[in-house]
Image: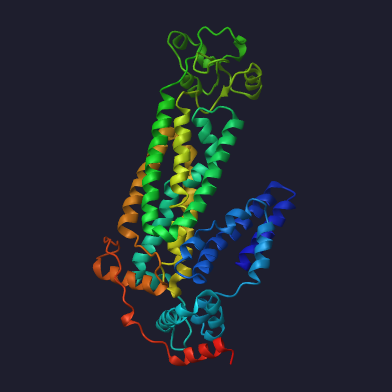
Length: 475
């Protein structure tokens, strides 16, 4: 995390001092590298230093890399100062053979009655993972794919991260002002204000997720979230479809504005001879100047440029270039808010929480990194393709595509994601071993829950607990 903060601060300083756009872009790329490192390291560190009954809530706290972007390098600098006071992950210390350094840290994390049990489980896992020299072995991609349990865990973790993006969350957050305009809110100011409402709802939903994830469980929270997301996306699709069928007509003949600023495509004989709508105007690459009193009354189709836009707005009319005025724009707004309400408590935090706890310690860093990389790549692809999809499929069709992705995500969570609420890392590992016995091939087609017993656990050498008693008594 300290390395991530250092990289982020360097990128922020470079952006602040950038003498040219190319240097600014370079600084932004360095900041992105810091964000990527933090998105892998932060959930792992939090998960490894948290008791199992509150691990989900702590991992669900919005990642520091998201807050960093708001005020550049200040949060990264504060995080550097805070992390210098925090201990190393005790699980990592045990894997590296530094048991004496790990025990005092565990004493600060776990109550005395749970300490012995946790140490037994962690020491047992460390003994299994270590090589002949007692130090944890390095893990390769081949080691992961060669283990059936790890293949199942990796499919679950990576799939969950990919589906988080395929349901369109970052598209909604990045393009919410544009989505509001597509819904018929022509004013950029109104569209921006409405997008702030969406961001506020997202923040409140994230707080709800922190409170719910360790009470309701990861799997149940993800499924209930996806049910709401699917319904909201369907509502958005229907809402945008309704806006395209509820378009005001173009005034004909139009004597409101000078003839030289009227859209040429609307003045041909074929166009004049039939009734044209606002959508026809926009498809002709022109702008629609709505009627001043009632936006649903016939308006004017004008040349699309900044000067003409100013003429239109100076006449107390709305200037529409992305979408047409509609009586159903509110339907898309309701769908958008409902989408955020459903997504933020569930599919927002659950993928990160699940990926921080479903892998054994020796695989956690590599597998967590693979899953985080899959998330960011999916984010890039979805965000870059959104506007192209709206031109190809229409806004309604694009959100219906997201609806289908959300329905697939529900099926995936139902069959591939086990419940890990309240389980220790060792219990989660036993869960995957059970699943591996009941499945064939690569995909975990089972929803059986774990029946975990500690009876088969190995005991930790009692010398460790003698040392622990000595530390506790201060002798």
